Image 1 (cartoon, rainbow, N blue to C red):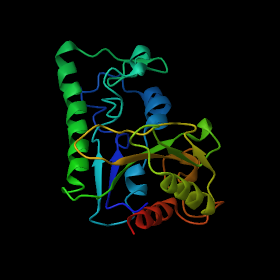
Image 2: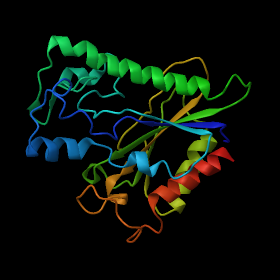
Image 3: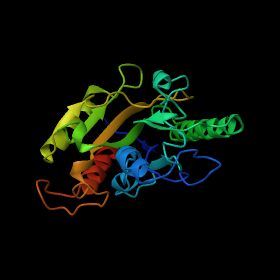
Length: 242
């Protein structure tokens, strides 16, 4: 279960680019911000997963909003048919038309992110035989999606973590007071093919566990949860590296 490196993948934590008329092409108004951006942005996940300072942990954060480019979508993603592939064209009735001249640039942002993630993975083992890397796919989801507090997701392929890692994650978060779902309400985890063998696991955090009410403000450590979630996650990662 021990890992030599952990790669934190944070594709949906940013809101940058929405007001850039060379990238966005959305009509930015209160309705779009409140009903789309607020709902789908993984608020503060780049904070929640950064509680442990360790040279063996590397983060790869996409610097733009998922409404500019969804860096986690697959090339030719099945969701393209409903306008939510790599380049969103529609969400909840909000639409955008992307000019032909901009599409290449936007797709370039997706390709660049994929290459950064692959380089981070390939450099994580430094050619050491037997070294092990874990990609943690870091996300959050709206409270209305599920009563699950923490969703643990993985693929049923070469990237699936060993059963000890999965069972440890489930038991650890349950013992910390959180209700855990396995591949529910979301499933799978990003796993780009590259030059090394590694494992990939998604952690989807229910926003109700760390946000204050219906806001995007971080909550205090009061209420039903005994500790700040960031402390729980940091300790979880520390154990994986021990």
